[in-house]
Image (tube, rainbow, N blue to C red; front, side, top):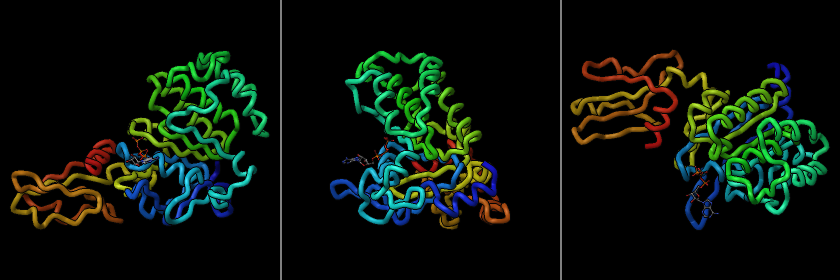
Length: 298
Ligand SMILES: Nc1ncnc2c1ncn2[C@@H]1O[C@H](COP(=O)(O)OP(=O)(O)OP(=O)(O)O)[C@@H](O)[C@H]1O
């Protein structure tokens, strides 16, 4: 989508937005005050450790669960009060799709196709064939990977403007993962759709996402363009004598058995590292996305 169209779309109705979104289960807080704006035409990769709250966040953003605090909005409307017009613009694939297990793949597509005015029968048929998925098999008898791919075809066939995928690659083999990533990139690039997907696979995220959101201990620690993370973060090792002078870090600080300290630092607005990085005996390792993830989340 060109920049002017994206700007106009965002001003009108950003595909997804959250303000102060919080949620918990059985007294345990999982999301804390999440503020998030997902720009039209962006591909946002949501990353975080097991149990970080990614699925919960995606469900809260889509109004599939009621947050304990805050609000989510989808195309400018309250997520908990979406009408059919908005629902038809969204496709969501949960982590473990289970619905309609007694139908065959073709029957499910036939059934769901009636609810979507833009349902693309030719795409559904051709992609099932291209991805070698059995149209006449019961959904309940598909392998987890086959089931996940069928759900992806289902989601794409509805020609959504917003596609939300909860760990879409979890059960996929490397070939299927490539096919999925290609499809996401194609849709985002050619049709300008907005995609949000959660993942643990950093390389997938780097390959296809325009933006990254990093969820840790219920908070969004980072939300920025993927390109902005390149060469921007580093691990700073300070020997024991300098440990007390380690720069403050919201991204991670560790004390080691020998008294040394490591902190995750970032460049300032002028691209400079904190002054402490220049002290003798201090080591600086620039972090790629995967190392940054491990460093923050460990
Ligand atoms: N229905 C529920 N009832 C109680 N606790 C829940 C429920 N759903 C999720 N949780 C808990 O909330 C936390 C966040 O779960 P969630 O599924 O959102 O994490 P996630 O980041 O998607 O994890 P994963 O990467 O393993 O899929 C976990 O500790 C989980 O045990």
